[in-house]
Image (cartoon, rainbow, N blue to C red; front, side):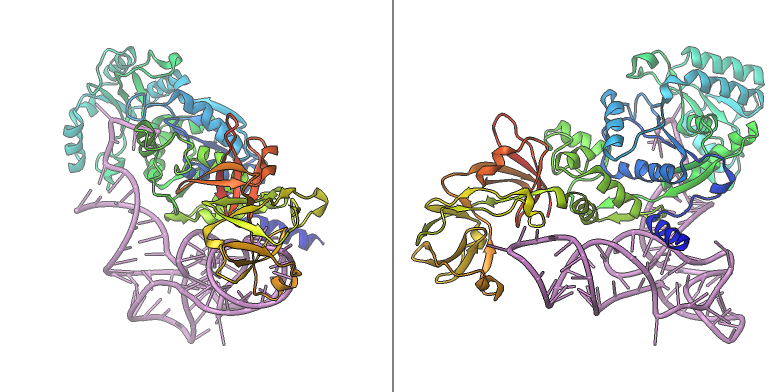
Length: 490
RNA sequence: GCUCCGUUGGUGUAGUCCGGCCAAUCAUUUCGGCCUUUCGAGCCGAUGACCUGGGUUCAAAUCCCAGACGGAGCACCA
C-alpha cells in the first residue's frame, strides 16, 4: 500500500527534485518580475514552477518587483496589480510581496559596507572607455581610490549631485578574470528620469539588478533561485559580493526561453506594448496577443497554463511550447461541466420539408442526461455551415431532429431511424433555425467570425463557457445585448 | 573576438552524476480501431528519438576527446 502511494506521488511530480533540498529547513524562493507591462504567456513559467515547488515542499515564495530601472525598462504603474492578478489566475498566491524601489536605503547601506570592505569603488570613466580597458584586462585609475573618497563620491551619488553617466559605483571583482562578463561590474548608476512610483520619485542613484537582487536574495533568506539563462552569469557576478560579506550563495537553476506555436506576434513585452499602442492589437487581451489576459478572456483556465508550464520542466535549452498542450489540459478541466450548444458559422439557409418534428431536444451534455435538454424550434428553414451542405440526393442527420434527404434545394424529412447514422453513410451535423436564433460574433485568433447560435444561448452571461458542438469551446462575452464569444480551442 | 551553457521521436520530458535491468519513460500531437446522434472524453493499437566522428570498456544515451549545430553573457536593461 505504501509502495502504491509512493508511486502515485512520483507520477505527480513531473518536476525534478530541487537541488540540495534536504539541506534547508524551509525552501524559500522568489518570483522577481519587472513590472514594465502585463504578463505574456512565457511569464507564467515563473510562478507555475516556483509555486508548484512551494506547494510540493510546503515552502515559501514571494513576489519581488525588481523595478530599479525608471528609464529603459520603465515600470508601468498598472502592471504591479495586473501581475498579482495574473498570479492568482494561474492558481497561486505569494506569501509576501516586496517592491525593490521601496528598499533603496537598504541597498545603499549594503553598498557602504561593501565600500568599507574594499569591495567597491566609484568610477567616472565613460562606458566606452571602461569597456576598452576591461576588454584589455586593465584596471582604470579609479580602482585605487582611498575608501574615504569612494564614500564621499557615493554619498554625492545618493544626494543626486551627478547627472546620468557621470559616476557609477563598481564592484571590485577580478579585472583580468578570464570571463570578461565578470570584470568589475556596475552596482549603482545615476538615472535622471524620476521613478514613476511617487514613493521612489526622488531617488536618482539606482542599483543594478545584479546588486539589488543579490542583496535581497540574502536578506529574504532565499534558498533556491530559479530564473532564465539570460541571467546565467549573474550568479557568478553576485558571488563576488557574497564573498565580501561572507554569505552563502543560494542554489540556482536556469531555464531556457519559451517559444509558442500558433501565434504570429512575438512574445515580448516591448513588442506587445508597441502593437497595442499602435492599435494593431485591440488591447492586451486581443485574441491574437500571446498574453495571459488574452487567454483569460478566451476562457482558458489558469491552472491549464500552469500544468503545461510545469510539464516543460526546467532545462536550460530553449523549448517550444505547443498551445495544444495548454488546450488539452484545459479540456480536462472544463469538458465535464460545459454545456453543449449549436453555433453555425457563415451559415447558408436551407428550407425544410416533409413535416419534421417541430422541436429538437438534444441534451445539454451527452454524458449527463440528467442536466436536461435544449429546446430548439426547427421552423421552416435552417442555417447550415457551407461545408456541411450535403450533395444532391444525399442524406444528412440534423442532430436532435432527424434524417433528411437533400433534394430540389430543400431538406426533406425522411423519418429514417438512427441506424442510418450507425451504418456510417449519413453524417451528423449541427444547425440553427433560420427564424429563431441569436446572432453571435465569435472572436478567434484568426479574426472575427459572424454566425448564429441556437436560441438557448440568451440564458448565459459573460464568463460562462459553452462548447459549440463541432466548433469548439468558447467563453461568452456579452456587452449591451450584443452576443460575442471568445473562441478557446477545439 | 573572449566566456559560459546546452543537444533524447513532430513537441515536451525521464534516464546521463554512480556504464549493464534502456532494442530507452511518460505526456502531448498525428494516424487507425471500438464506443458515441457532435466534438471531446474513455478504451485498444500504430508511427516516431539518444547531434556527428573517434576513443575507453566484455558492455556507452550514460565516461573521455574532437567537431557540428543551437542558446546566453561580455549594458550606466531586467
